[in-house]
Length: 129
Image (cartoon, rainbow, N blue to C red; front, top):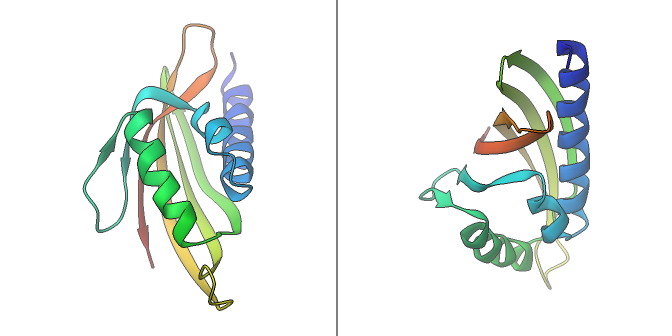
């Protein structure tokens, strides 16, 4: 696969995964991740593996209903590894309160090429501005 095709595939993963999470479709969101993926949320310990993230993600979704807008700042492909550095904006509504608060998150996905030349997210690291 040519680098341009890889960059396009990774860009599509970011858009589709973000859309799934925004819509509360955690199972589809998780299809973009390796089984042993590690999430490194800001101010929390790492979350290792899809099952652990499923538990963590449900609690997060119950606390807020994020609406995401993402912009990729940089996608780099180097052999079987790649990263996507992006900015994500959320307009979170507090459950039951009806209040909205905007947050800007800086994210980094480290992706690994799979045997079928597709990409899976292996690490997700983020913090807030």
